[in-house]
Amino acid sequence: MKLSEPYKIQCLIPDLPEPQEILPYLEEMHAARWYSNFGPLNSRFEAAMKSFICEGAGGPDFEVVTFTSATTALEAALRSLELREGARVLIPTLTFPATATAVINAGFVPILADVDADSWEMLPHHARETIAKQSVDVVMPVSAYGKPIPTAEWDHFVADTGIPVIADTAAALGQQPVGKHIHLAFSLHATKPFSVGEGGLLVTPDAALASRSKSWSNFGFSGPHGVISQIGTNAKMGEYYAATGLVQIERWPQVKARRQTVLDMYRDALAPLGNRIKLQESANTFIPATFVVHTGGQAPQIGKTMAEAGIHTRFWYLPPLYEHPALEGLVSGIDLTKAFPVTEELKNSLIGLPFHVFLSQQDVDDIVATLTQIL
Ligand SMILES: Cc1ncc(COP(=O)(O)O)c(C=O)c1O
Image 1 (tube, protein in one colour):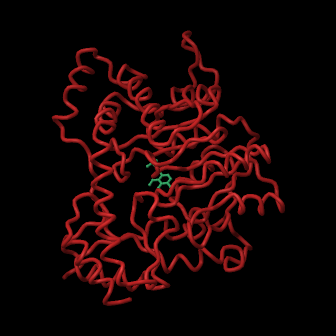
Image 2 (tube, protein in one colour):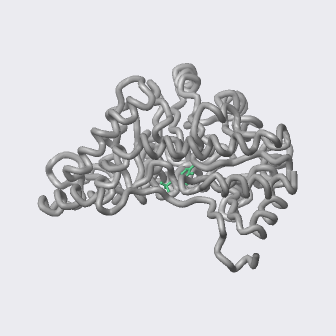
Image 3 (cartoon, protein in one colour):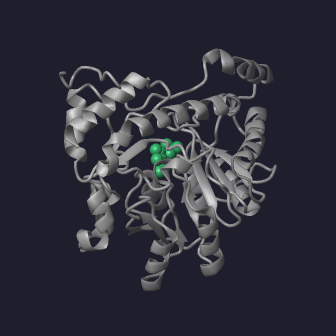
């Protein structure tokens, strides 16, 4: 196949409601002539999200605030901690660049930590090792590829050290338990399993932080008098997106079941490859947002062969943060192989196989057959 031709099998196809499913909410919105500024649909979506998150996970009381994206939700939470300019925020090397840009846009400095070889996440022990050597003001773990972060362990870390944790759980909505101390930012972008097209959520047990974050998303206004009490921005979710979110909550059981079916097809098809392919740790306890596998250093070759066979793969979260030209300054003078040995190994091993609800058994068999040619 010529590389200019469209792929036979796409890596990711968003799964959003049909327009007619959203229409009743849009008619309601239009009748009220209220399209943004924390309108009735946004309030309903925030309230419905509270029960949705409880049902999926259980746990203590918390606030839900909508945003334009996970990136703005992360920035809002960081700013609302009211730390000094230049505060140091520990983040993993293996993540989407927005984890780092949110920190920088909030006026803080990202400090990089390596990830775990099996879960591909930065874990509490990485944070403990770093704070033993240098000062860290905030820790931002990432739910890698949608794998829920260990809530109880991070809660324990906050209780123990007093260092706040704002987790970038962008891809884990519907599967990530909430904690007693940690703040969570979710993405509702089209590429995420629970998507409204574009949007984000902050989920926090801290009502004051929720309120400052919400005010920041609305130019810094607080109270009824039309005055700003902080320098905010405009990061409010509009009513069109809230309408889609209300439908997505209704659709979630089917969305989840279809994603599980595709995952099961992969598990069966990959089984004969044995340990030539490694899945993310605890892969049988959650449904990933993107299906990334470890190929023992063969990811570039697999990507090429797949493309020639018309199969689209993605190197999600790669290159590592420190290889992005805009972020290279974070590691100047550091020996990368010594500082980040796991990431250095993972960067040629991880590859995202096609994963979405429109894949057929035949597609999965073709993908795995192509993989088998190389492994
Ligand atoms: C780990 C991670 N953080 C942040 C984001 C950004 O989310 P959003 O597009 O909602 O800003 C993404 C999106 O892919 C992500 O994967």
